[in-house]
Length: 428
Image (cartoon, rainbow, N blue to C red; front, side, top):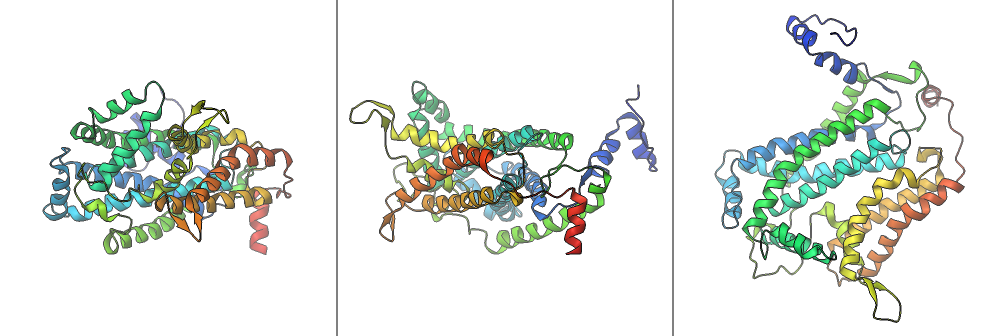
């Protein structure tokens, strides 16, 4: 039984398929005629860019997995073989390795855009939640991929991070043993991480489908943060935004290609090219750059939480750091409820804009602190104190500043419609 009217296609094969499975009608509806606000800026490119990077990571990862050996005694050498003996193996590895960094760049900009323009607010709460879930899955996938070359940095990063779970009361030790597959980081650990690293990108792809589905149900937000009010406020997605996305994607990929071919190791630590030795600890264990702010948050909790002036401790420093590190991501899930201000876009909320830009600088500073050693001192100031202040602001932004501004900030006047604002901008 037909589910509704559809326009026939001129191509006989396409029409034959679509009359039986209307996939082409769906594509036309969702990616050609789909109405989108006419005032998108280039920040809206990064969703499509992230999608392309995800597909690129999956494709290169599948090919690399054909030549990789997930065994503690052979993993490092198999990566070297990929680099030296496999046809175009060096390019595939560099594409995959640097692709992770560029994937995170696109996603971080995408998240910042959502926060700046209020894309997490009603009715897009579920859209935002799916996005944060994708980010969390990305972090897990990237961490396990970081360990697969079985280098000094990757192997010891696996040791340090998995040991953090031992701080969880009651189940911590059992959880660590489950992750390790034994009594230490060894071959079973590598097998677990390889298996999950191969599987999780497909889970991410499934959540991305839900993310895009939710987007097409609620419609896109826009820089003004006001809903379209009629066809005069929108344009079809194709050709207007397919062309704009193609231009933005081209610029992004040019930068990606430049790094991949001319500066392929710019994001890599030297210890990442030395085989893992459980008897030799690197002097400074650092994660990849996109984890550095969360690593700084983890290290900033240097104190126990309990009853002052007694020996009673509720949360020790190690467990507190673990809670803070994971909490820094989990708090993003609740942003739609922390921010109840009726105006979405930071363009019309000057104090929120200042607080959000301060958060961006705070996040960058946390990354710098995470890059340095735990006992580093700059300009006579121990960086651990800087990390603690930045961590305090990070959480205060979500649980204190944003709720307070939601109730007390007076917004600037909003334009009457997207169309009026576009015409006014062109006239100016």
